[in-house]
Length: 113
Image (tube, rainbow, N blue to C red):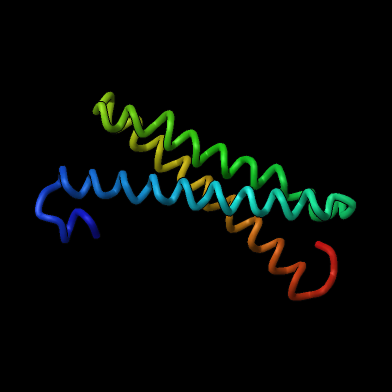
């Protein structure tokens, strides 16, 4: 949408970078909250099963922000770094969906998942 509605690709790319940066911050805060909940309920082994998935999602977000993004900004092998960043973003969303699904299933059914 940014590349369609903003007047230049450079402006759209810069705005996309800012949006991804904000998304990384929001993801990190949400992950910290989830980890805090898991820590508080650490006696529940079923809940701690998804902690590695949360950590993987955070690692993907931070890797995209602090490892991939600088290469994209510097335009180093742009196609490779863009694909890697997209893959990390997809992995982050898959982790989020898995955690949400497990948590929603647990909350809605009243049983441990």
